[in-house]
Length: 224
Image 1 (spheres, rainbow, N blue to C red):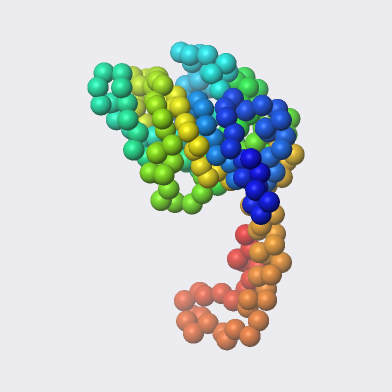
Image 2 (cartoon, rainbow, N blue to C red; image 1 turned 30 degrees about the vertical axis):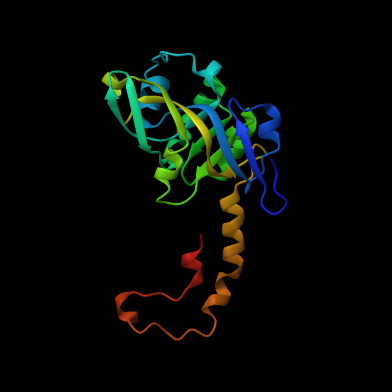
């Protein structure tokens, strides 16, 4: 569903080719349906060490969430999650070619996104997008979108926090389209606009009072 002012989409997983194609950098997305978590432990165990997942991830969903859910086992095999917050996506760019190629992932949800080079070299090739959570302190809001924990796998091998969690979601969001399938990065574009105007903020400023402590008054060293 699209809004005239800010483009907002409510999508269900697995995402279709049409879903991915209409997303542009800067759009907002709300996701419903199954997703699975994957970060350090899962990437190493599955992609580097070659352990096959205990379930058919590719047929379940094509959305993966880089998160360590704040969840507990309340009874044997039953889990509850109070908070769901992403971890920094740039840490995992090295795993993206194998994840997207081997498991058909079309959307990766993380925090702050990856580089524009990652989008152009990897995401465009596989017709995938990178979504980012919005700021800090929203973990409980994202966690409230979990309808059910469908399963938690590799707990013994990786521990509960690094395990592979499969979650059923209802309108998880807002998520920002940081990198779209055309190779555009929202943050890169915004940072370029900021840098163009940054110099004007220094005009008329007096020299730093505590210059001896190393304070600078050079916009070029503050470029984003």
